[in-house]
Length: 180
Image (tube, helix red, strand yellow):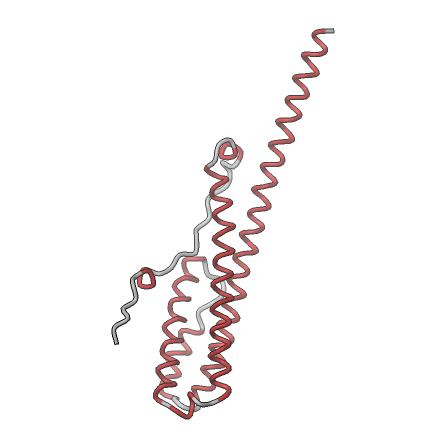
């Protein structure tokens, strides 16, 4: 009778360990899906930004034809990029948006255009959406990477690699000068 109890307890313990291991593996897999969802959200936000900047570029073309080539090259950067490549493209789009605003300063009739103002609002909205998508992506990457390094999960997660965070460019980390 004592042997049956010991065997039953051993089987019960083994079953609990197996169930726990399955739950941990499933947690890793769910986090991978969430990271993919966050990655897709960043891509959607970059697409929205791209579309808005493209429309703004089209409006600006009427006013500043000589600026078009520079802007068009930057806008063509997008799909099939890794997160670090997207960061670089995002920085180039930031530069382009700043140049579009400089063009608007040079052409007062463009700045007063209702379409241009709406597009500027659209860019602000796209930027907010992009920031939210980046935060969601980084939150999911953080949860996954934390699980990878936390014992005992790290033992079951050895088959997985940590994901890279979306990070700000060095220039954007610097303090902004407020001198006029």
